Image (cartoon, rainbow, N blue to C red; front, top):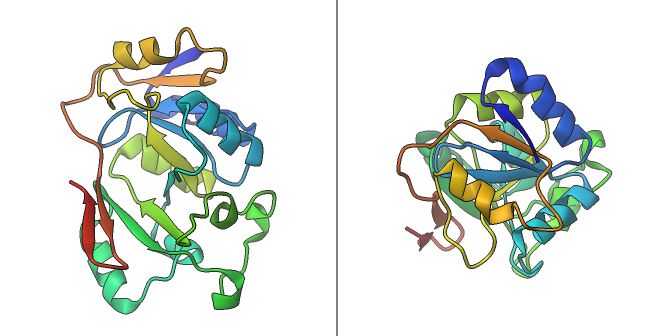
Length: 205
């Protein structure tokens, strides 16, 4: 795993790894996370293998703005008003996927692997979030595509803000992340709150 510092001058290196189908360990506004290009089928498969996560358990996405979220999910005026209050921030919103029949035309840059299909659940829902972390927001702005995001731990282990613990999770694995963006230890924080905006309940506090 190549390690770089979490500085703006390394933005191009991070984007290049995402574009090449790599998986990145990155700081976020909650815990350290694993990121990859949601429109790259091999990258999505790799993040599941690194995470040792069953494919029946969907992953959420980071989006750069409400406009991108609307390309993925059905967001009415009431939901949009709520999301504008809590985004950017530590709230993952579970929403109904917008399919082609519902006016969700696939953007040209997503056609290699439409995230609405690769991350589709049986309930046809998707988890979305706009983070509040400067470097991550710059990545999303420059990358211009939704990014798969999940905590940087293997299934069954706790999410963490400690960089050494993150590295220890993956150092002996056959399949490892390709790049580590090291921001040292993050402030003590928990993963994002998950809110089901379809049924209006909290799935994770």
